[in-house]
Length: 507
Image (cartoon, rainbow, N blue to C red; front, side, top):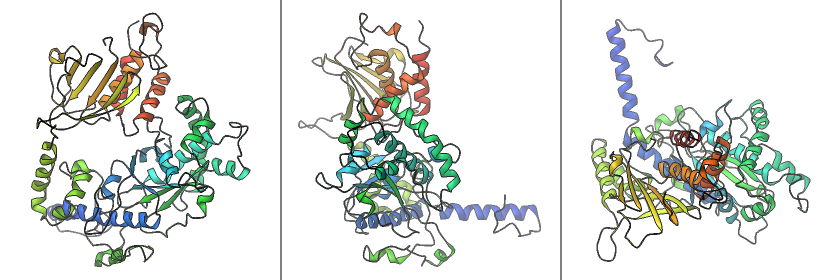
Protein backbone atom coordinates (compact mmCIF):
# COMPACT_ATOMS: atom_id res chain seq x y z
CA UNK A 1 0.00 0.00 0.00
CA UNK A 2 1.56 3.37 -0.97
CA UNK A 3 2.60 5.77 1.73
CA UNK A 4 1.58 9.44 1.86
CA UNK A 5 4.71 10.58 0.04
CA UNK A 6 4.01 8.46 -3.06
CA UNK A 7 0.21 8.11 -3.04
CA UNK A 8 -0.32 10.86 -5.64
CA UNK A 9 2.27 9.57 -8.13
CA UNK A 10 0.86 8.08 -11.34
CA UNK A 11 2.78 5.61 -13.51
CA UNK A 12 2.08 4.47 -17.03
CA UNK A 13 1.89 0.76 -16.20
CA UNK A 14 1.57 -1.72 -13.35
CA UNK A 15 5.13 -2.84 -14.08
CA UNK A 16 6.39 0.69 -13.42
CA UNK A 17 4.46 0.73 -10.15
CA UNK A 18 6.00 -2.61 -9.22
CA UNK A 19 9.53 -1.47 -10.03
CA UNK A 20 9.11 1.78 -8.11
CA UNK A 21 7.81 -0.08 -5.04
CA UNK A 22 10.79 -2.41 -5.22
CA UNK A 23 13.19 0.55 -5.38
CA UNK A 24 11.51 2.11 -2.35
CA UNK A 25 11.80 -1.19 -0.50
CA UNK A 26 15.48 -1.45 -1.35
CA UNK A 27 16.05 2.11 -0.11
CA UNK A 28 14.30 1.40 3.18
CA UNK A 29 16.31 -1.77 3.71
CA UNK A 30 19.57 0.05 2.95
CA UNK A 31 18.66 2.72 5.48
CA UNK A 32 18.09 0.00 8.09
CA UNK A 33 21.50 -1.52 7.45
CA UNK A 34 23.58 -3.03 10.25
CA UNK A 35 26.12 -0.22 10.02
CA UNK A 36 23.44 2.46 10.40
CA UNK A 37 21.96 0.59 13.37
CA UNK A 38 25.29 0.29 15.15
CA UNK A 39 26.07 3.98 14.66
CA UNK A 40 22.60 4.96 15.81
CA UNK A 41 22.98 2.82 18.93
CA UNK A 42 26.21 4.59 19.81
CA UNK A 43 24.55 7.96 19.21
CA UNK A 44 21.71 7.06 21.56
CA UNK A 45 24.17 5.68 24.11
CA UNK A 46 25.90 9.09 24.10
CA UNK A 47 22.60 10.60 25.23
CA UNK A 48 22.24 8.00 27.99
CA UNK A 49 25.78 8.79 29.16
CA UNK A 50 24.87 12.48 29.24
CA UNK A 51 21.81 11.71 31.35
CA UNK A 52 23.93 9.67 33.76
CA UNK A 53 26.34 12.59 34.07
CA UNK A 54 23.50 15.04 34.71
CA UNK A 55 22.01 12.86 37.48
CA UNK A 56 25.06 11.51 39.33
CA UNK A 57 24.48 8.76 41.83
CA UNK A 58 21.47 7.35 40.02
CA UNK A 59 21.86 3.68 39.12
CA UNK A 60 21.77 2.89 35.39
CA UNK A 61 19.29 0.08 34.76
CA UNK A 62 18.54 -1.43 31.35
CA UNK A 63 14.97 -2.33 30.54
CA UNK A 64 15.48 -5.56 28.64
CA UNK A 65 15.54 -6.70 25.90
CA UNK A 66 17.05 -3.71 24.14
CA UNK A 67 18.01 -1.38 26.98
CA UNK A 68 21.44 -2.98 27.47
CA UNK A 69 22.55 -1.86 24.00
CA UNK A 70 22.48 1.78 25.11
CA UNK A 71 24.63 1.34 28.22
CA UNK A 72 28.31 0.66 27.43
CA UNK A 73 29.70 -2.30 29.34
CA UNK A 74 33.26 -1.00 29.01
CA UNK A 75 34.64 2.51 29.39
CA UNK A 76 37.02 4.58 27.35
CA UNK A 77 35.54 4.44 23.86
CA UNK A 78 35.51 7.14 21.20
CA UNK A 79 32.50 8.83 22.74
CA UNK A 80 34.23 9.02 26.14
CA UNK A 81 31.38 7.18 27.79
CA UNK A 82 32.42 5.55 31.03
CA UNK A 83 29.05 4.64 32.52
CA UNK A 84 28.26 1.01 33.29
CA UNK A 85 25.03 -0.92 33.71
CA UNK A 86 24.09 -1.40 37.34
CA UNK A 87 21.23 -3.80 36.71
CA UNK A 88 18.43 -4.99 34.48
CA UNK A 89 14.65 -4.74 34.66
CA UNK A 90 11.83 -6.39 32.75
CA UNK A 91 8.94 -4.03 32.12
CA UNK A 92 6.98 -5.03 29.03
CA UNK A 93 5.30 -2.53 26.72
CA UNK A 94 2.42 -4.98 26.25
CA UNK A 95 1.48 -4.42 29.91
CA UNK A 96 1.00 -0.74 29.03
CA UNK A 97 -0.94 -1.07 25.78
CA UNK A 98 -4.15 0.93 25.75
CA UNK A 99 -7.01 -1.09 27.18
CA UNK A 100 -4.65 -3.91 28.22
CA UNK A 101 -2.97 -2.24 31.21
CA UNK A 102 -1.56 -4.79 33.61
CA UNK A 103 0.72 -5.29 36.59
CA UNK A 104 2.76 -8.38 35.86
CA UNK A 105 2.80 -10.98 38.60
CA UNK A 106 5.69 -12.71 36.77
CA UNK A 107 7.94 -9.68 36.32
CA UNK A 108 7.77 -8.07 39.76
CA UNK A 109 11.12 -6.21 39.50
CA UNK A 110 11.28 -5.93 43.30
CA UNK A 111 15.07 -6.21 43.11
CA UNK A 112 15.14 -2.57 41.93
CA UNK A 113 13.96 -1.12 45.24
CA UNK A 114 17.17 -1.61 47.27
CA UNK A 115 19.14 -0.45 44.23
CA UNK A 116 17.12 2.77 44.06
CA UNK A 117 17.46 3.49 47.77
CA UNK A 118 21.16 2.67 47.83
CA UNK A 119 21.92 5.65 45.63
CA UNK A 120 20.87 8.13 48.31
CA UNK A 121 23.27 6.76 50.92
CA UNK A 122 22.24 5.11 54.16
CA UNK A 123 22.53 8.31 56.18
CA UNK A 124 20.79 10.58 53.67
CA UNK A 125 17.20 11.63 54.43
CA UNK A 126 16.62 12.27 50.74
CA UNK A 127 15.11 9.86 48.29
CA UNK A 128 17.25 7.84 45.96
CA UNK A 129 16.84 7.14 42.28
CA UNK A 130 17.62 5.12 39.21
CA UNK A 131 17.68 5.70 35.45
CA UNK A 132 15.67 3.10 33.54
CA UNK A 133 16.86 2.99 29.93
CA UNK A 134 14.74 1.87 26.98
CA UNK A 135 14.02 2.92 23.40
CA UNK A 136 11.17 2.85 20.92
CA UNK A 137 10.71 2.66 17.19
CA UNK A 138 9.96 5.42 14.73
CA UNK A 139 6.82 7.41 15.31
CA UNK A 140 6.61 7.28 19.13
CA UNK A 141 8.08 9.59 21.75
CA UNK A 142 8.57 6.87 24.33
CA UNK A 143 7.74 3.17 24.71
CA UNK A 144 4.60 2.12 26.56
CA UNK A 145 6.84 0.34 29.07
CA UNK A 146 8.15 3.72 30.25
CA UNK A 147 5.00 5.80 29.83
CA UNK A 148 2.47 3.37 31.36
CA UNK A 149 3.86 0.03 32.60
CA UNK A 150 6.36 1.62 35.01
CA UNK A 151 3.89 4.25 36.32
CA UNK A 152 1.47 1.42 37.14
CA UNK A 153 4.28 -0.51 38.85
CA UNK A 154 5.18 2.51 40.99
CA UNK A 155 1.56 3.18 41.94
CA UNK A 156 0.81 -0.46 42.82
CA UNK A 157 3.89 -0.77 45.03
CA UNK A 158 3.24 2.58 46.67
CA UNK A 159 -0.31 1.63 47.57
CA UNK A 160 0.77 -1.78 48.85
CA UNK A 161 3.62 -0.43 50.98
CA UNK A 162 2.08 2.84 52.16
CA UNK A 163 -1.46 1.74 52.99
CA UNK A 164 -3.38 3.87 55.48
CA UNK A 165 -4.22 0.99 57.83
CA UNK A 166 -1.05 -1.04 57.34
CA UNK A 167 1.26 0.52 59.93
CA UNK A 168 -0.49 2.04 62.95
CA UNK A 169 2.77 3.30 64.44
CA UNK A 170 4.06 4.81 61.19
CA UNK A 171 4.82 8.47 60.66
CA UNK A 172 2.97 8.65 57.35
CA UNK A 173 1.96 12.22 56.65
CA UNK A 174 -1.16 13.14 54.68
CA UNK A 175 1.10 14.30 51.87
CA UNK A 176 2.97 10.99 51.79
CA UNK A 177 -0.27 9.05 51.66
CA UNK A 178 -1.50 11.28 48.84
CA UNK A 179 1.77 10.78 46.97
CA UNK A 180 1.42 7.02 47.32
CA UNK A 181 -2.12 7.04 45.97
CA UNK A 182 -1.39 9.07 42.84
CA UNK A 183 -0.80 7.51 39.41
CA UNK A 184 1.77 9.73 37.70
CA UNK A 185 1.89 9.48 33.88
CA UNK A 186 3.73 11.67 31.33
CA UNK A 187 1.67 14.70 30.22
CA UNK A 188 1.11 14.87 26.48
CA UNK A 189 1.70 11.13 26.13
CA UNK A 190 -1.00 9.65 28.39
CA UNK A 191 -4.32 11.50 28.40
CA UNK A 192 -6.29 12.27 31.55
CA UNK A 193 -8.96 9.80 30.41
CA UNK A 194 -6.45 6.97 29.99
CA UNK A 195 -4.85 7.80 33.32
CA UNK A 196 -8.26 7.50 34.96
CA UNK A 197 -8.95 4.13 33.32
CA UNK A 198 -5.53 2.84 34.37
CA UNK A 199 -6.06 4.04 37.94
CA UNK A 200 -9.35 2.15 38.15
CA UNK A 201 -7.46 -1.13 37.75
CA UNK A 202 -4.86 -0.42 40.42
CA UNK A 203 -6.83 -1.77 43.45
CA UNK A 204 -7.15 -5.19 41.80
CA UNK A 205 -3.42 -5.18 40.98
CA UNK A 206 -2.58 -4.34 44.61
CA UNK A 207 -4.80 -7.17 45.85
CA UNK A 208 -3.13 -9.60 43.44
CA UNK A 209 0.36 -8.55 44.58
CA UNK A 210 -0.51 -8.98 48.25
CA UNK A 211 -2.04 -12.38 47.54
CA UNK A 212 1.29 -13.59 46.14
CA UNK A 213 2.84 -13.27 49.58
CA UNK A 214 6.24 -12.12 48.29
CA UNK A 215 6.10 -8.99 50.48
CA UNK A 216 5.85 -11.16 53.58
CA UNK A 217 3.35 -11.07 56.43
CA UNK A 218 4.74 -7.80 57.84
CA UNK A 219 4.55 -5.12 55.16
CA UNK A 220 6.09 -2.48 57.40
CA UNK A 221 9.16 -4.65 58.01
CA UNK A 222 9.47 -5.44 54.31
CA UNK A 223 9.25 -1.76 53.45
CA UNK A 224 11.88 -0.78 56.01
CA UNK A 225 14.24 -3.38 54.58
CA UNK A 226 13.71 -2.62 50.89
CA UNK A 227 12.81 1.09 51.01
CA UNK A 228 14.85 2.16 54.04
CA UNK A 229 14.42 5.89 53.36
CA UNK A 230 10.66 5.43 53.66
CA UNK A 231 9.69 7.38 50.53
CA UNK A 232 7.25 6.38 47.77
CA UNK A 233 8.29 5.88 44.15
CA UNK A 234 7.84 8.64 41.59
CA UNK A 235 8.28 8.10 37.83
CA UNK A 236 9.77 11.00 35.84
CA UNK A 237 10.46 11.05 32.09
CA UNK A 238 13.25 12.21 29.85
CA UNK A 239 13.86 11.89 26.09
CA UNK A 240 16.36 13.53 23.71
CA UNK A 241 13.54 15.82 22.53
CA UNK A 242 12.26 17.31 25.78
CA UNK A 243 13.62 19.56 28.55
CA UNK A 244 15.49 17.76 31.28
CA UNK A 245 13.45 17.38 34.48
CA UNK A 246 14.56 18.98 37.72
CA UNK A 247 14.33 16.12 40.20
CA UNK A 248 16.26 17.79 43.00
CA UNK A 249 13.22 19.10 44.87
CA UNK A 250 11.28 15.88 44.23
CA UNK A 251 13.84 13.78 46.09
CA UNK A 252 12.75 15.27 49.40
CA UNK A 253 9.44 13.41 48.96
CA UNK A 254 10.17 10.57 46.54
CA UNK A 255 12.49 7.90 45.27
CA UNK A 256 12.89 8.87 41.62
CA UNK A 257 12.46 6.38 38.77
CA UNK A 258 13.83 8.35 35.82
CA UNK A 259 12.37 6.76 32.68
CA UNK A 260 14.91 7.49 29.96
CA UNK A 261 13.97 7.02 26.31
CA UNK A 262 17.32 6.89 24.53
CA UNK A 263 16.02 7.31 20.97
CA UNK A 264 15.36 10.59 19.20
CA UNK A 265 12.24 11.17 17.09
CA UNK A 266 13.61 12.12 13.63
CA UNK A 267 12.33 15.32 12.06
CA UNK A 268 12.77 16.90 8.59
CA UNK A 269 15.64 19.02 9.94
CA UNK A 270 17.65 15.83 10.50
CA UNK A 271 17.98 15.22 6.76
CA UNK A 272 20.82 17.72 6.42
CA UNK A 273 22.84 16.11 9.18
CA UNK A 274 22.40 19.03 11.56
CA UNK A 275 19.24 18.02 13.35
CA UNK A 276 18.48 19.20 16.83
CA UNK A 277 20.47 17.66 19.66
CA UNK A 278 17.63 18.30 22.06
CA UNK A 279 17.50 20.79 24.94
CA UNK A 280 20.44 19.24 26.75
CA UNK A 281 22.58 21.12 29.25
CA UNK A 282 25.59 22.36 27.29
CA UNK A 283 27.94 21.54 30.14
CA UNK A 284 27.31 17.80 29.88
CA UNK A 285 29.00 16.81 26.63
CA UNK A 286 29.96 19.18 23.82
CA UNK A 287 30.05 16.30 21.31
CA UNK A 288 26.28 16.03 21.56
CA UNK A 289 25.90 19.33 19.72
CA UNK A 290 26.77 17.62 16.44
CA UNK A 291 23.15 16.64 15.82
CA UNK A 292 21.82 13.48 14.25
CA UNK A 293 22.96 11.90 10.98
CA UNK A 294 20.50 11.48 8.08
CA UNK A 295 21.15 7.74 8.50
CA UNK A 296 20.00 7.79 12.12
CA UNK A 297 17.54 4.99 13.03
CA UNK A 298 15.15 5.49 15.92
CA UNK A 299 15.03 2.44 18.22
CA UNK A 300 17.87 0.83 16.27
CA UNK A 301 18.43 -1.98 18.80
CA UNK A 302 14.93 -3.39 18.45
CA UNK A 303 14.36 -6.73 16.70
CA UNK A 304 17.94 -7.95 17.06
CA UNK A 305 16.91 -11.41 15.91
CA UNK A 306 16.37 -9.91 12.44
CA UNK A 307 19.66 -8.07 12.02
CA UNK A 308 22.27 -8.69 14.74
CA UNK A 309 23.61 -12.12 13.56
CA UNK A 310 24.09 -13.13 17.20
CA UNK A 311 25.83 -9.90 18.25
CA UNK A 312 25.17 -9.01 21.90
CA UNK A 313 25.48 -5.67 23.70
CA UNK A 314 28.58 -6.93 25.50
CA UNK A 315 30.28 -7.92 22.24
CA UNK A 316 29.21 -4.70 20.56
CA UNK A 317 30.79 -2.46 23.19
CA UNK A 318 33.89 -4.63 23.49
CA UNK A 319 34.51 -4.28 19.72
CA UNK A 320 32.65 -1.04 19.01
CA UNK A 321 35.38 0.78 17.10
CA UNK A 322 36.23 -2.24 14.97
CA UNK A 323 32.58 -2.79 14.09
CA UNK A 324 31.95 0.84 13.19
CA UNK A 325 35.05 0.92 10.98
CA UNK A 326 34.02 -2.20 9.02
CA UNK A 327 32.22 -1.84 5.65
CA UNK A 328 28.61 -2.97 5.59
CA UNK A 329 29.32 -5.90 3.28
CA UNK A 330 31.91 -7.31 5.72
CA UNK A 331 29.92 -6.84 8.94
CA UNK A 332 28.03 -10.18 8.96
CA UNK A 333 31.31 -12.10 8.58
CA UNK A 334 33.01 -10.08 11.33
CA UNK A 335 30.06 -10.46 13.70
CA UNK A 336 29.93 -14.21 13.09
CA UNK A 337 33.64 -14.46 13.89
CA UNK A 338 33.23 -12.43 17.10
CA UNK A 339 30.30 -14.55 18.24
CA UNK A 340 32.18 -17.80 17.58
CA UNK A 341 35.27 -16.51 19.36
CA UNK A 342 33.25 -15.51 22.42
CA UNK A 343 31.49 -18.89 22.53
CA UNK A 344 34.80 -20.75 22.29
CA UNK A 345 36.46 -18.84 25.12
CA UNK A 346 35.43 -21.31 27.83
CA UNK A 347 37.56 -20.82 30.96
CA UNK A 348 40.04 -23.46 32.10
CA UNK A 349 40.91 -24.47 35.61
CA UNK A 350 44.34 -24.34 37.25
CA UNK A 351 45.43 -27.56 35.57
CA UNK A 352 44.59 -26.23 32.10
CA UNK A 353 41.54 -28.47 31.74
CA UNK A 354 38.49 -26.85 30.19
CA UNK A 355 35.99 -26.09 32.93
CA UNK A 356 32.22 -26.11 32.72
CA UNK A 357 31.09 -23.01 34.60
CA UNK A 358 27.55 -22.38 35.67
CA UNK A 359 25.64 -19.97 37.86
CA UNK A 360 22.85 -20.99 40.20
CA UNK A 361 20.47 -19.18 42.50
CA UNK A 362 18.79 -20.81 45.48
CA UNK A 363 15.00 -20.80 45.16
CA UNK A 364 14.25 -22.96 48.21
CA UNK A 365 16.55 -24.65 50.76
CA UNK A 366 16.86 -27.71 48.50
CA UNK A 367 16.28 -26.27 45.04
CA UNK A 368 18.28 -23.97 42.76
CA UNK A 369 18.14 -22.96 39.10
CA UNK A 370 20.57 -21.24 36.80
CA UNK A 371 22.60 -21.20 33.60
CA UNK A 372 25.49 -23.21 32.24
CA UNK A 373 27.95 -21.34 30.06
CA UNK A 374 30.64 -22.20 27.56
CA UNK A 375 30.46 -24.50 24.56
CA UNK A 376 29.84 -27.75 26.46
CA UNK A 377 27.26 -28.70 29.06
CA UNK A 378 28.48 -29.60 32.55
CA UNK A 379 29.50 -33.29 32.78
CA UNK A 380 28.09 -35.78 35.30
CA UNK A 381 28.87 -34.94 38.90
CA UNK A 382 31.75 -36.73 40.62
CA UNK A 383 30.80 -39.74 42.78
CA UNK A 384 31.46 -37.68 45.90
CA UNK A 385 28.53 -35.36 45.06
CA UNK A 386 25.90 -37.72 46.40
CA UNK A 387 23.90 -34.88 47.96
CA UNK A 388 23.14 -33.14 44.64
CA UNK A 389 20.81 -34.08 41.81
CA UNK A 390 21.68 -32.11 38.67
CA UNK A 391 19.35 -31.61 35.68
CA UNK A 392 21.01 -30.03 32.64
CA UNK A 393 19.12 -28.92 29.53
CA UNK A 394 20.98 -28.82 26.21
CA UNK A 395 20.09 -27.46 22.78
CA UNK A 396 20.49 -30.78 20.96
CA UNK A 397 17.56 -33.14 20.52
CA UNK A 398 18.23 -36.47 22.28
CA UNK A 399 16.22 -39.59 23.07
CA UNK A 400 14.73 -39.82 26.53
CA UNK A 401 16.46 -43.17 27.00
CA UNK A 402 19.83 -41.41 26.91
CA UNK A 403 19.06 -38.64 29.42
CA UNK A 404 20.31 -40.42 32.53
CA UNK A 405 24.09 -39.95 32.53
CA UNK A 406 24.58 -40.92 36.17
CA UNK A 407 22.37 -41.75 39.17
CA UNK A 408 22.37 -38.07 40.12
CA UNK A 409 22.74 -36.41 36.69
CA UNK A 410 20.22 -35.94 33.87
CA UNK A 411 21.17 -34.32 30.55
CA UNK A 412 17.92 -33.51 28.78
CA UNK A 413 18.07 -32.64 25.09
CA UNK A 414 14.99 -30.65 24.04
CA UNK A 415 16.40 -29.10 20.86
CA UNK A 416 17.09 -25.47 20.03
CA UNK A 417 13.61 -24.21 20.94
CA UNK A 418 13.93 -23.38 24.62
CA UNK A 419 10.15 -22.76 24.78
CA UNK A 420 9.31 -26.12 24.40
CA UNK A 421 13.28 -37.38 42.26
CA UNK A 422 15.30 -39.19 44.40
CA UNK A 423 15.97 -38.46 48.09
CA UNK A 424 18.74 -35.90 47.62
CA UNK A 425 19.63 -32.83 49.64
CA UNK A 426 19.62 -30.49 46.67
CA UNK A 427 18.34 -30.29 43.10
CA UNK A 428 20.15 -28.08 40.61
CA UNK A 429 18.44 -27.21 37.30
CA UNK A 430 20.56 -25.62 34.56
CA UNK A 431 19.82 -24.53 30.99
CA UNK A 432 21.75 -22.49 28.38
CA UNK A 433 20.04 -19.20 29.28
CA UNK A 434 19.13 -19.64 32.94
CA UNK A 435 15.94 -17.70 32.28
CA UNK A 436 13.31 -19.94 30.73
CA UNK A 437 13.27 -23.74 30.68
CA UNK A 438 15.32 -24.18 33.86
CA UNK A 439 13.00 -21.74 35.65
CA UNK A 440 9.90 -23.58 34.43
CA UNK A 441 11.34 -26.92 35.52
CA UNK A 442 12.28 -25.49 38.91
CA UNK A 443 8.72 -24.14 39.26
CA UNK A 444 7.25 -27.59 38.55
CA UNK A 445 9.66 -29.17 41.04
CA UNK A 446 8.97 -26.50 43.66
CA UNK A 447 5.26 -27.28 43.47
CA UNK A 448 5.48 -31.04 43.04
CA UNK A 449 8.39 -32.01 45.29
CA UNK A 450 8.34 -29.33 47.99
CA UNK A 451 5.77 -28.17 50.51
CA UNK A 452 4.66 -24.61 51.17
CA UNK A 453 7.56 -24.02 53.58
CA UNK A 454 10.10 -25.12 50.97
CA UNK A 455 10.92 -28.46 52.56
CA UNK A 456 10.78 -31.78 50.66
CA UNK A 457 7.40 -33.44 50.58
CA UNK A 458 7.06 -36.64 52.56
CA UNK A 459 4.38 -39.32 52.49
CA UNK A 460 3.65 -38.58 56.15
CA UNK A 461 3.43 -34.78 56.23
CA UNK A 462 2.62 -33.57 52.71
CA UNK A 463 2.03 -36.33 50.15
CA UNK A 464 1.94 -35.06 46.61
CA UNK A 465 -1.22 -37.00 45.79
CA UNK A 466 -3.17 -34.93 48.32
CA UNK A 467 -1.68 -31.63 47.18
CA UNK A 468 -3.88 -29.11 45.39
CA UNK A 469 -2.44 -27.41 42.31
CA UNK A 470 -4.27 -24.49 40.73
CA UNK A 471 -3.20 -21.31 38.95
CA UNK A 472 -3.21 -19.23 42.14
CA UNK A 473 -0.92 -21.66 43.98
CA UNK A 474 1.40 -21.97 41.00
CA UNK A 475 1.46 -18.18 40.63
CA UNK A 476 2.49 -17.75 44.28
CA UNK A 477 5.37 -20.24 43.87
CA UNK A 478 6.42 -18.45 40.66
CA UNK A 479 6.44 -15.18 42.60
CA UNK A 480 8.98 -16.67 45.00
CA UNK A 481 11.20 -17.72 42.11
CA UNK A 482 10.97 -14.33 40.38
CA UNK A 483 11.87 -12.58 43.62
CA UNK A 484 14.98 -14.75 43.97
CA UNK A 485 15.77 -14.62 40.22
CA UNK A 486 14.69 -11.20 38.89
CA UNK A 487 16.53 -11.84 35.61
CA UNK A 488 14.35 -14.88 34.88
CA UNK A 489 11.81 -14.58 32.09
CA UNK A 490 9.96 -17.87 31.55
CA UNK A 491 7.96 -17.87 28.34
CA UNK A 492 4.20 -18.23 28.22
CA UNK A 493 4.62 -21.64 26.57
CA UNK A 494 6.86 -22.84 29.40
CA UNK A 495 4.42 -21.68 32.08
CA UNK A 496 1.48 -23.22 30.26
CA UNK A 497 3.36 -26.53 30.20
CA UNK A 498 3.93 -26.29 33.96
CA UNK A 499 0.24 -25.55 34.57
CA UNK A 500 -0.78 -28.45 32.35
CA UNK A 501 1.60 -30.88 34.09
CA UNK A 502 0.56 -29.97 37.61
CA UNK A 503 -3.16 -29.45 37.11
CA UNK A 504 -3.66 -32.58 35.00
CA UNK A 505 -1.93 -34.98 37.42
CA UNK A 506 -3.91 -38.21 37.85
CA UNK A 507 -5.44 -38.59 41.29
